Amino acid sequence: MLIAPPPEMLWESVDPENELRRRFGFEDAAAAVDWAADLLAGDYRISVRSVDRLVISAQNLMVWVTTPPSRLMIKICRIAAVHGWLDARAAMVDWLADHDHPVARPLTSLGGERQLLRDDRSIGVQPVLDGSLLDAGDDVQVRAAGQTLAALHDDLACWPDAKRLTDAWPVAGRGELWVLPEGRAETAPELVERLRRRIDELPDRSGLPAEQPVHTDFRGANLLWHDTRISGVLDFEEARLDPAVVDLAHAVCLLGTWYHDWQPITPQRQRLLIDSYTDRRPLSETEDRWLQALIGWGMLGLGWYAEADRWL
Image (cartoon, helix red, strand yellow):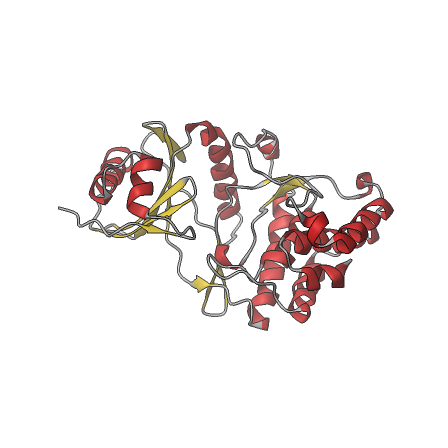
């Protein structure tokens, strides 16, 4: 009999046991663990020795398990409508693994599926990679992050199935370019006006390289460091088509963010991240001008006004 650990919330301050019932329909942790173990046994022919963690993050339930060959993470999304979206991104991660990127290649089920649809839930199974969360206060790790992001962009631009990412996100809530949280015009009117002027002065978007697959959430909580290298780039679920410079700007803003600890990296490390990226993937003049405005917009949206002031 498997022992179910108590459920946890990854970043929200709510009762995890209540959310396990409300969001996922499991009466308790034991029911969730049994369901996940049955899925592994039936669809992958893998037995579970122990269950290590049970974590809820928004619409996802993550179950870390130990199996005879290795540790695995079962990621259960409660929204069936996103299954096609997640399946496309699982295919992309599989392709990245073929090209030697440090990603968690999804396991393929006995039926040949990377992403399963069971009981109105979309499920992926992946290996647990070695490493601890990136320390964005370490220059060596920040430099490696910039190089890793540039390498990702180089190869993702060549992914032959990029058209699979053209579908719209089926759940409301994804941000649009240049949109700010409600109230920013009242709390930081001068910065909002400076951003507007910056946007008006930008070269036309047609001067940027073509849209390509990008990560969109390349930050400390999704990067693992082991020994002397980036050992894992995680969570491609929000991958989309965008100019690569948009993704770089997001990374500059978000690299220092973990689950409960949100802060910008220092100006020096922001520059280090950009320089290590451009050493591999130089920016055009148009991209560079867009990058500055995009970082200013991102910092302003996060409420980091001193950083927005530097970039705008």
